[in-house]
Amino acid sequence: MKNIYLIGIGLIGGSFAIDLRRKYPKAVLHGISRKDETLQKACDLNLIDQKATLDDLKNADLVVVSIPVDATVKLLPSILDKIAETTLVIDAGSTKEAICKVVENHPRRRNFLACHPIAGTENSGPTAAIPNLYVGKTNIICEVEKTTFKLQEKALEIFSELGMRIRYMDAKSHDKHIAYVSHLSHISSFMLGKTVLEKEKNERDIFDMAGSGFTSTVRLAKSSPAMWTPIFEQNKENVIETLEEYINNLEHFKKLMQQDNFSEIFSEMENANYIKQILNGIK
Ligand code: NAP
Image (cartoon, protein in one colour):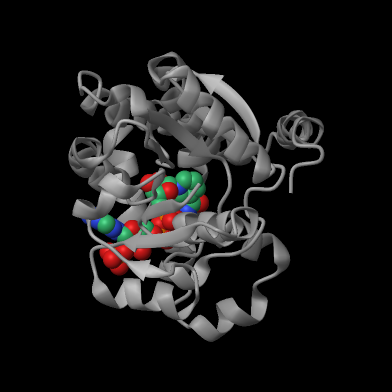
């Protein structure tokens, strides 16, 4: 692989860059972003070798698209317009239906592989990029049958080099399931952060009393609104459904408290403890 183009060099794109450089030392890494200062930062951090533009994509062997999902929907058709016949384009978007839909009839649809690496942190931008982010993590691939067999093979080889496990899913199921395990967790954390900030106007008290429970539960509230707003917009129906179920559970918990029904509260929490067995081994 000679020329790798990274469109978006934040946490996800930058972390791809670090590991791709290690695994493909002869490849030149080209970066594309909206702002020159972001590209410059990516150069300074040695995430990329060169700044580039969409017009250079005709030289690409691999294009990794890691920009907010609304920008991916807007840009992906033009990216496919500009690539060569042998180029593999992968994305990392946290939603998959809208992204797959926008290119379903594109003449270069077979060059595109829709992916969602289940890996990340609450940090964003080029400085958030870290090595080994993808090691041992699952990469969800959607609509695999729409990508040419040769490019599927190429992608699987790259993901294997990066240490990823693969799971196949249709885009609709991906968006439905991910609404529960990722999108709802983020809303829950954002709103926990909001509730505590509004109640505790004196930030010093929050800081002094924050234990590891609060810190870990509110961690996702540090995530970027520029990345999350378009995710909630694209997955609106599924996210609203998860929110209704979650709010019902919170209401139920409140009612049990009002009724002094602590034996039922005990069993609610005991039932929720089952999550330990499901998540055993996930860091
Ligand atoms: P990020 O750290 O905020 O990086 C995104 C980068 O995209 C920014 O540096 C921004 O650079 C650039 N960008 C924004 N709009 C652009 C456009 N129109 N054209 C070119 N560049 C643009 O976000 P991220 O966490 O890496 O997320 C990237 C993608 O991965 C998203 O689709 C997200 O859903 C997905 N994802 C995220 C996670 C996670 O945990 N964070 C996990 C899995 C998948 P500028 O400063 O130049 O605008």
